[in-house]
Image 1 (tube, one colour):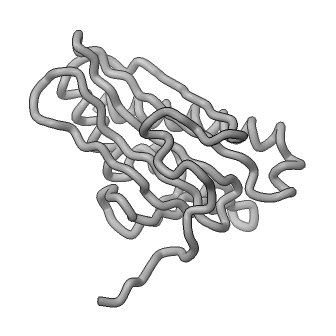
Image 2: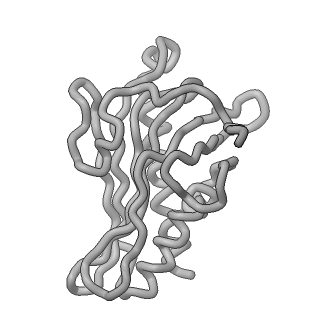
Length: 180
């Protein structure tokens, strides 16, 4: 079987999978954002489906090219934002996936992906939808990263502002998924 990858290279940071266990590698600033989306198992499953089919990224305004329509470990994806020569492409590889389980009890579903060469940062980001014991549903975004090169280091304040903006777009995308 021939392995045709969307992008080449290897994951380029320490602590692969750390967004799943909550312990970022030393020296990598981390960010956790959480937002209430509503109530009920149907809402939870709708958002989980959107997360696990790249729809969260698309609704956030990103252009998404992925090796699979469904998020799977090892799948490579290139998401991009911007226009024309000002487009920034961000190649990543899925490092973990959690799917919804049967039943209405507390659970979470989502995935984490890590950066590949060519991404403006080095690190990992995770997108999870959680339902608690009372049926409340939350989106949780966990990330740790450092600038990939000196250009992004010099643009630190702009880079952090861009990360906050993209996170706000993910939250808006999740609200759209929740609304159906």
